Image (cartoon, rainbow, N blue to C red):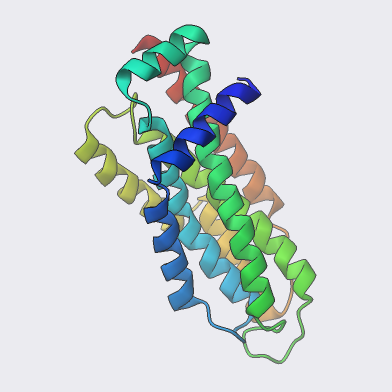
Length: 222
């Protein structure tokens, strides 16, 4: 994968304006659930949870942005798996940027305190933990997007339904890195301590790499 491929996929995403729908929906989600003066760790956990389905959606957009003829030309000029990997990485990077912006905004308007407002919480440390949690959810969302779109699932209806179901399971299923990271933020807010979700981050990175590798392998065969 080269910088040129990433630049090409990023330009496709920006020009398509298909990113507007998930970004506006995520902004509305955060606007409803995150209010000024709320505990910072709770608010960051809420915002991170909402980022997961948005990440899956953005990956789906990036994979399906190119017309079939243009995609065939890109694959022939590089390799099918390189072209597919570039679209997956572009979707993840877009999600990560959105999560970073959300982390900054939430940290700026939230209260540096525990859930009961009795224990002080350092906002810079909370923002760092929130950024890691956002990254976990972005990685898991990218993994969901990678396995619920072409070439894994060719049907659009089945792919969208699978994406929504997998995103929900990724947030509630035991053992999910996203659930572990978000739960750590909520528990930390209740206790007045800032978590460090490094283990969920490592698990999310491994899951995203595995799903991307499987999707790229299928793209070369199909």
